[in-house]
Image 1 (spheres, rainbow, N blue to C red):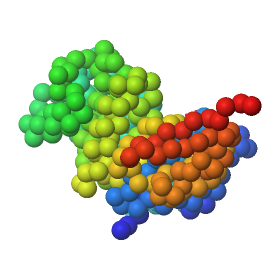
Image 2 (image 1 turned 90 degrees about the vertical axis):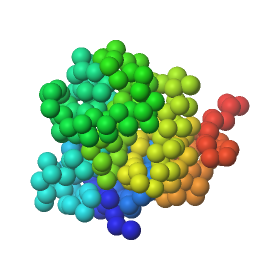
Image 3 (image 1 turned 180 degrees about the vertical axis):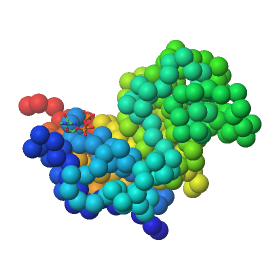
Length: 263
Ligand SMILES: Nc1ncnc2c1ncn2[C@@H]1O[C@H](COP(=O)(O)OP(=O)(O)OP(=O)(O)O)[C@@H](O)[C@H]1O
Protein backbone atom coordinates (compact mmCIF):
# COMPACT_ATOMS: atom_id res chain seq x y z
CA UNK A 1 0.00 0.00 0.00
CA UNK A 2 1.28 3.46 -0.82
CA UNK A 3 0.87 6.50 1.38
CA UNK A 4 -1.81 9.04 0.51
CA UNK A 5 -0.42 11.39 3.14
CA UNK A 6 2.99 11.51 4.76
CA UNK A 7 3.97 14.23 7.19
CA UNK A 8 7.53 14.21 8.51
CA UNK A 9 8.39 16.47 11.43
CA UNK A 10 5.81 19.05 10.36
CA UNK A 11 5.34 22.26 12.33
CA UNK A 12 3.13 25.24 11.57
CA UNK A 13 4.27 28.34 13.43
CA UNK A 14 2.22 31.56 13.71
CA UNK A 15 3.22 34.54 15.87
CA UNK A 16 6.00 32.48 17.40
CA UNK A 17 3.60 29.68 18.47
CA UNK A 18 3.54 26.16 17.04
CA UNK A 19 -0.09 25.38 16.10
CA UNK A 20 1.13 21.97 14.97
CA UNK A 21 4.35 20.83 16.59
CA UNK A 22 6.74 18.37 14.91
CA UNK A 23 4.04 16.02 13.66
CA UNK A 24 5.02 12.85 11.82
CA UNK A 25 2.07 10.89 10.49
CA UNK A 26 1.33 8.54 7.60
CA UNK A 27 -2.01 7.62 6.07
CA UNK A 28 -1.88 4.58 3.79
CA UNK A 29 -4.20 4.00 0.86
CA UNK A 30 -7.60 2.67 1.93
CA UNK A 31 -7.28 3.74 5.57
CA UNK A 32 -10.06 5.75 7.22
CA UNK A 33 -8.68 8.08 9.89
CA UNK A 34 -10.32 10.11 12.64
CA UNK A 35 -8.51 13.13 14.07
CA UNK A 36 -9.74 13.66 17.61
CA UNK A 37 -8.79 16.37 20.08
CA UNK A 38 -10.03 19.34 22.10
CA UNK A 39 -10.80 22.82 20.76
CA UNK A 40 -7.72 24.55 19.46
CA UNK A 41 -5.61 21.37 19.40
CA UNK A 42 -4.59 21.79 15.75
CA UNK A 43 -7.03 19.43 14.01
CA UNK A 44 -8.15 21.85 11.29
CA UNK A 45 -4.55 22.98 10.80
CA UNK A 46 -3.59 19.35 10.05
CA UNK A 47 -6.53 19.02 7.65
CA UNK A 48 -5.55 22.25 5.91
CA UNK A 49 -2.09 20.78 5.25
CA UNK A 50 -3.64 17.54 3.98
CA UNK A 51 -5.79 19.58 1.57
CA UNK A 52 -2.69 21.48 0.30
CA UNK A 53 -4.14 24.84 1.36
CA UNK A 54 -1.54 25.30 4.12
CA UNK A 55 2.19 24.71 3.82
CA UNK A 56 4.23 23.61 6.85
CA UNK A 57 6.65 26.15 8.33
CA UNK A 58 9.16 23.32 8.79
CA UNK A 59 9.16 19.62 7.91
CA UNK A 60 7.84 17.95 4.78
CA UNK A 61 4.35 17.04 3.65
CA UNK A 62 3.69 14.60 0.86
CA UNK A 63 0.12 14.30 -0.45
CA UNK A 64 -0.87 11.58 -2.93
CA UNK A 65 2.80 11.05 -3.69
CA UNK A 66 3.46 14.75 -4.37
CA UNK A 67 5.63 16.89 -2.13
CA UNK A 68 4.05 20.19 -1.02
CA UNK A 69 6.22 22.98 -2.37
CA UNK A 70 7.38 20.94 -5.35
CA UNK A 71 4.04 20.39 -7.06
CA UNK A 72 1.43 22.56 -8.73
CA UNK A 73 -1.33 22.54 -6.09
CA UNK A 74 -3.92 23.28 -8.77
CA UNK A 75 -3.19 19.86 -10.25
CA UNK A 76 -3.25 18.21 -6.83
CA UNK A 77 -6.46 19.75 -5.45
CA UNK A 78 -8.96 18.05 -7.80
CA UNK A 79 -7.64 14.74 -6.45
CA UNK A 80 -8.73 15.71 -2.93
CA UNK A 81 -12.40 15.95 -1.86
CA UNK A 82 -13.25 18.29 1.00
CA UNK A 83 -16.31 18.98 3.09
CA UNK A 84 -16.35 21.45 5.95
CA UNK A 85 -17.83 24.71 7.11
CA UNK A 86 -15.04 26.82 5.56
CA UNK A 87 -15.97 25.49 2.12
CA UNK A 88 -19.72 25.62 2.78
CA UNK A 89 -19.43 29.37 3.34
CA UNK A 90 -18.08 29.78 -0.19
CA UNK A 91 -20.97 27.90 -1.81
CA UNK A 92 -23.63 30.21 -3.23
CA UNK A 93 -26.84 30.04 -1.20
CA UNK A 94 -29.01 30.57 -4.26
CA UNK A 95 -27.73 27.54 -6.18
CA UNK A 96 -29.83 24.39 -6.11
CA UNK A 97 -28.60 21.23 -4.42
CA UNK A 98 -28.02 19.58 -7.81
CA UNK A 99 -26.09 22.59 -9.11
CA UNK A 100 -24.02 22.73 -5.93
CA UNK A 101 -22.83 19.17 -6.47
CA UNK A 102 -22.51 19.44 -10.23
CA UNK A 103 -20.24 22.52 -10.18
CA UNK A 104 -17.63 20.45 -8.30
CA UNK A 105 -17.08 18.38 -11.45
CA UNK A 106 -15.76 21.54 -13.09
CA UNK A 107 -13.62 22.65 -10.14
CA UNK A 108 -15.87 25.57 -9.33
CA UNK A 109 -18.04 26.65 -6.44
CA UNK A 110 -20.39 28.60 -8.71
CA UNK A 111 -21.11 29.31 -12.36
CA UNK A 112 -24.05 27.30 -13.53
CA UNK A 113 -23.94 26.59 -17.27
CA UNK A 114 -26.48 24.86 -19.44
CA UNK A 115 -23.99 22.52 -21.08
CA UNK A 116 -23.06 20.21 -18.26
CA UNK A 117 -22.62 16.69 -19.51
CA UNK A 118 -25.46 14.28 -18.91
CA UNK A 119 -23.03 11.79 -17.45
CA UNK A 120 -21.97 14.34 -14.82
CA UNK A 121 -25.56 15.10 -13.92
CA UNK A 122 -26.24 11.38 -13.53
CA UNK A 123 -23.24 11.08 -11.20
CA UNK A 124 -24.36 14.06 -9.14
CA UNK A 125 -27.85 12.56 -8.79
CA UNK A 126 -26.38 9.20 -7.78
CA UNK A 127 -24.17 10.70 -5.04
CA UNK A 128 -27.07 12.81 -3.77
CA UNK A 129 -29.24 9.72 -3.71
CA UNK A 130 -26.60 7.89 -1.65
CA UNK A 131 -26.59 10.75 0.82
CA UNK A 132 -30.39 10.77 1.06
CA UNK A 133 -30.86 14.06 -0.79
CA UNK A 134 -32.92 12.91 -3.79
CA UNK A 135 -36.03 14.70 -2.54
CA UNK A 136 -34.20 18.02 -2.32
CA UNK A 137 -32.45 18.31 -5.70
CA UNK A 138 -34.11 21.62 -6.62
CA UNK A 139 -33.95 23.21 -3.18
CA UNK A 140 -31.68 26.23 -2.81
CA UNK A 141 -28.51 25.42 -0.83
CA UNK A 142 -29.11 28.40 1.47
CA UNK A 143 -32.51 27.07 2.55
CA UNK A 144 -31.26 23.64 3.65
CA UNK A 145 -31.08 22.47 7.24
CA UNK A 146 -27.63 21.92 8.73
CA UNK A 147 -27.87 18.16 8.19
CA UNK A 148 -29.02 18.50 4.58
CA UNK A 149 -26.21 20.96 3.95
CA UNK A 150 -23.61 18.55 5.34
CA UNK A 151 -24.90 15.68 3.22
CA UNK A 152 -24.91 17.87 0.10
CA UNK A 153 -21.30 18.84 0.80
CA UNK A 154 -20.20 15.22 1.10
CA UNK A 155 -21.92 14.36 -2.20
CA UNK A 156 -20.12 17.37 -3.70
CA UNK A 157 -16.76 16.24 -2.31
CA UNK A 158 -17.20 12.81 -3.94
CA UNK A 159 -18.07 14.29 -7.34
CA UNK A 160 -14.47 14.58 -8.57
CA UNK A 161 -13.80 10.94 -7.70
CA UNK A 162 -11.11 11.99 -5.20
CA UNK A 163 -8.32 9.73 -3.97
CA UNK A 164 -8.47 11.38 -0.54
CA UNK A 165 -11.64 12.60 1.19
CA UNK A 166 -11.32 15.15 4.01
CA UNK A 167 -14.25 15.78 6.34
CA UNK A 168 -14.06 18.62 8.85
CA UNK A 169 -16.56 18.01 11.68
CA UNK A 170 -19.29 16.60 9.41
CA UNK A 171 -21.66 16.00 12.34
CA UNK A 172 -21.21 19.39 14.05
CA UNK A 173 -24.53 21.10 14.71
CA UNK A 174 -26.67 18.04 13.91
CA UNK A 175 -29.41 16.80 16.22
CA UNK A 176 -29.34 13.20 17.46
CA UNK A 177 -31.30 11.85 14.49
CA UNK A 178 -29.25 13.85 12.02
CA UNK A 179 -26.01 12.66 13.58
CA UNK A 180 -27.06 9.02 13.55
CA UNK A 181 -28.25 9.30 9.96
CA UNK A 182 -24.92 10.80 8.93
CA UNK A 183 -22.90 8.24 10.90
CA UNK A 184 -24.77 5.43 9.12
CA UNK A 185 -24.09 6.99 5.73
CA UNK A 186 -20.43 7.63 6.56
CA UNK A 187 -20.22 4.03 7.78
CA UNK A 188 -21.48 2.78 4.44
CA UNK A 189 -18.95 4.95 2.65
CA UNK A 190 -16.10 3.93 4.98
CA UNK A 191 -16.78 0.25 4.37
CA UNK A 192 -16.98 0.66 0.59
CA UNK A 193 -13.68 -0.72 -0.78
CA UNK A 194 -13.94 1.63 -3.77
CA UNK A 195 -14.38 4.73 -1.60
CA UNK A 196 -11.35 7.03 -1.25
CA UNK A 197 -9.01 7.09 1.73
CA UNK A 198 -10.65 9.27 4.38
CA UNK A 199 -9.64 11.66 7.15
CA UNK A 200 -12.38 13.03 9.41
CA UNK A 201 -11.95 15.65 12.12
CA UNK A 202 -14.29 15.37 15.08
CA UNK A 203 -14.65 16.29 18.76
CA UNK A 204 -16.77 13.28 19.72
CA UNK A 205 -16.07 9.53 19.74
CA UNK A 206 -19.83 9.01 19.19
CA UNK A 207 -19.34 10.39 15.67
CA UNK A 208 -16.84 7.69 14.66
CA UNK A 209 -18.64 5.64 12.04
CA UNK A 210 -18.18 1.87 11.74
CA UNK A 211 -15.57 1.20 9.08
CA UNK A 212 -13.17 3.89 10.30
CA UNK A 213 -9.86 2.18 10.99
CA UNK A 214 -7.41 4.56 12.65
CA UNK A 215 -7.38 7.48 15.06
CA UNK A 216 -4.92 10.29 15.71
CA UNK A 217 -5.17 12.00 19.11
CA UNK A 218 -3.85 15.57 19.15
CA UNK A 219 -3.45 18.01 22.03
CA UNK A 220 -1.82 21.45 21.91
CA UNK A 221 -0.40 20.77 18.46
CA UNK A 222 1.32 17.53 19.43
CA UNK A 223 0.30 14.02 18.45
CA UNK A 224 -0.32 12.00 21.60
CA UNK A 225 -1.05 8.69 19.88
CA UNK A 226 -1.86 7.53 16.36
CA UNK A 227 -2.80 4.06 15.18
CA UNK A 228 -5.61 1.48 14.88
CA UNK A 229 -8.76 2.59 16.75
CA UNK A 230 -9.03 -0.40 19.14
CA UNK A 231 -5.43 0.12 20.29
CA UNK A 232 -5.43 3.90 20.59
CA UNK A 233 -8.96 4.76 21.73
CA UNK A 234 -8.51 3.83 25.39
CA UNK A 235 -9.79 5.62 28.50
CA UNK A 236 -6.22 6.51 29.51
CA UNK A 237 -5.35 8.02 26.11
CA UNK A 238 -8.61 9.95 25.74
CA UNK A 239 -8.30 11.30 29.29
CA UNK A 240 -4.80 12.54 28.48
CA UNK A 241 -6.03 14.07 25.24
CA UNK A 242 -8.95 16.02 26.72
CA UNK A 243 -7.30 16.72 30.09
CA UNK A 244 -9.89 15.13 32.39
CA UNK A 245 -10.78 11.60 33.50
CA UNK A 246 -12.88 9.89 30.84
CA UNK A 247 -14.23 6.38 30.46
CA UNK A 248 -14.38 5.09 26.89
CA UNK A 249 -16.70 2.27 25.96
CA UNK A 250 -17.04 0.27 22.79
CA UNK A 251 -20.42 -1.29 22.06
CA UNK A 252 -20.68 -3.25 18.86
CA UNK A 253 -19.03 -1.04 16.32
CA UNK A 254 -19.70 2.30 18.06
CA UNK A 255 -17.91 4.31 20.76
CA UNK A 256 -19.00 6.44 23.71
CA UNK A 257 -17.08 8.48 26.27
CA UNK A 258 -18.16 9.85 29.64
CA UNK A 259 -16.49 12.04 32.23
CA UNK A 260 -16.13 10.55 35.72
CA UNK A 261 -18.32 12.32 38.32
CA UNK A 262 -16.71 14.91 40.60
CA UNK A 263 -16.17 13.61 44.14
N1 LIG B 1 -3.64 31.95 11.19
C1 LIG B 1 -3.50 31.76 12.50
N2 LIG B 1 -2.72 32.57 13.25
C2 LIG B 1 -2.58 32.36 14.57
N3 LIG B 1 -3.16 31.36 15.24
C3 LIG B 1 -3.95 30.53 14.55
C4 LIG B 1 -4.18 30.66 13.15
N4 LIG B 1 -5.00 29.67 12.75
C5 LIG B 1 -5.30 28.95 13.84
N5 LIG B 1 -4.68 29.45 14.93
C6 LIG B 1 -4.71 28.90 16.30
O1 LIG B 1 -4.13 27.61 16.21
C7 LIG B 1 -4.71 26.72 17.14
C8 LIG B 1 -5.16 25.48 16.42
O2 LIG B 1 -6.25 25.81 15.56
P1 LIG B 1 -7.10 24.71 14.80
O3 LIG B 1 -8.20 25.43 14.09
O4 LIG B 1 -6.19 23.86 14.00
O5 LIG B 1 -7.66 23.87 16.03
P2 LIG B 1 -8.81 22.78 16.05
O6 LIG B 1 -8.24 21.62 16.79
O7 LIG B 1 -9.34 22.53 14.69
O8 LIG B 1 -9.88 23.53 16.96
P3 LIG B 1 -11.48 23.46 17.01
O9 LIG B 1 -11.78 22.10 17.55
O10 LIG B 1 -11.83 24.52 18.00
O11 LIG B 1 -12.01 23.70 15.65
C9 LIG B 1 -5.83 27.50 17.81
O12 LIG B 1 -5.36 27.97 19.05
C10 LIG B 1 -6.09 28.68 16.86
O13 LIG B 1 -6.55 29.80 17.57
